[in-house]
Length: 245
Image (cartoon, rainbow, N blue to C red; front, side, top):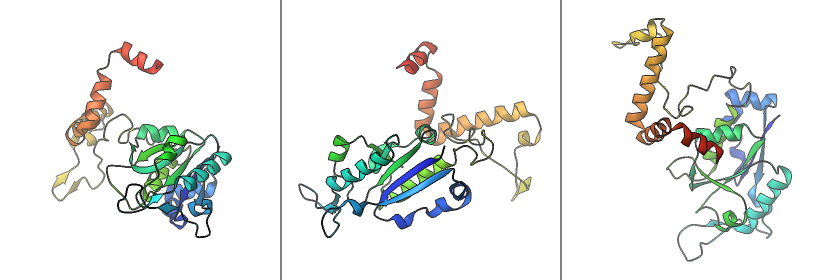
């Protein structure tokens, strides 16, 4: 099954961009996933193809119009009714690796790329649109965030990374940051690869990596560590109840 990505944007020329090279580009050529970019202005009804207007209540910038966006969303759903619709906005819920895996396991995704001051709030009230943020940063538009999310999904598609287990020990997959990585030369600028990694003892290597992963997460991302340790300490009855909810 081909993973179908549809991107609504004022700048379709930004795609596929980096998604046209390396693993994602090869998968695109092989038909593992498809990309359809749609110009938002195509859904404007006036002769000037207007997509934005001044904010109600005053203020700087412009806001993307709900009638134009609503028509775009309806168009997307008429063509790909089973694909979730995501709107890239700093007001959205931060994307997680768990959500990326859910998206990658589905038929595809439709992404609305915001510009200016963002979207008219009424589209979220009237349409089933998932508000998504890439991080606690503000970009000039949703396109770079859409590229990042699509890249994260595409690399998880069957056959893109090669071995099915390739991504399982990476950061966030188990709720932790990945352990440190090393390669040759053994010594570089007076620093050596940790001895345990050269020991050939796979049990000790596994234990070292687990400990490093936990230590780095606790020090660098206390928010992740709190969630991880909370889940780990959750009683089995509570975990079962959560799964049943």
